[in-house]
Length: 357
Ligand SMILES: Cc1cc2nc3c(=O)[nH]c(=O)nc-3n(C[C@H](O)[C@H](O)[C@H](O)COP(=O)(O)OP(=O)(O)OC[C@H]3O[C@@H](n4cnc5c(N)ncnc54)[C@H](O)[C@@H]3O)c2cc1C
Image (cartoon, rainbow, N blue to C red):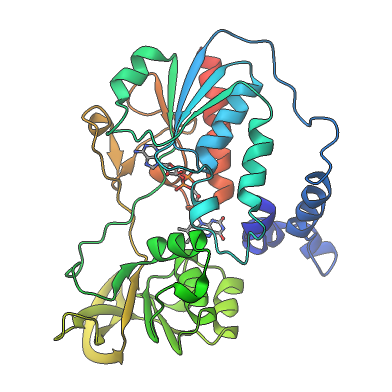
């Protein structure tokens, strides 16, 4: 999946030594993609072999890139892994979030099937931490626990009950699961709030699904948008307008449905945003929010975990404030919310768990 979704132009290609000595970096994303596309249809000999069984048991909560990576590495190291996943399908945002045009042909599920073929990983579907399972029970039953819960979007910025006001991640999840795109509800005039990849994906996909006007509104300058320049240009090539230096002021909805959105311009004063008082309005019937991720805890023991910035605080090995609990991916503080990073967190935590056991 990394070969398909990583912004390699900023992560690796930007740092490639060939930028200095040649004029072009190694196109690592395309090379990875070529290798994996070649391997998957005819896997041949397994790429990985499990170590002898250790007799230790590890619980992994969440089957996104972080959880699956942790499960795979822990199994590779000889431990038996049980994965608890709230949804009926595995893959996390690989399955429910990543734009459909980046991952065609149900690649996410094929990758999961390959990953599980290593053995030693049991899956329990529809088992949500805080509902069907509790952290204390997992801590009693297993030698170590890894939390790969992902991020949850909760804004609380504006009246959440206005029709036409939605969450970009949910919009994309609905799209990824849809069998008939024609039956999807897509606005004619869509406003997407934020500056990351979710925003670009929601905007481009709205446009591709027939919206006539799509505008991304970001609170700082365009250079500072978390979405890479390539992604921004991708959006603009699809007719999406990007407006910077403005924050949401109000959503007009006299009929109970979004009718227009008012923004107020801001300026940067010593690193803080200051309202200028200049207001402008966009006609809109749909507003998609994709800003801010805050973790919600429904489990009393999870709620005791030390947090930073609303997410789980971890050290460089993914250790949480509880001695036998590790965490990684979007639910932890300090990352960049990228697939490759979640995968790395899962792997590093599995190796840390292994050392600790
Ligand atoms: C729309 C969108 C587009 C993106 N595009 C890109 C991209 O192009 N490139 C890129 O690198 N990154 C992209 N990202 C970011 C990337 O998808 C995430 O950083 C990555 O998926 C994080 O992995 P994770 O395992 O931490 O979380 P997730 O992928 O969110 O997986 C978490 C898993 O935990 C499960 N879960 C949640 N709560 C519970 C619970 N209580 N009990 C049990 N299970 C639970 C969820 O169902 C899910 O399966 C995108 C994100 C979004 C939202």
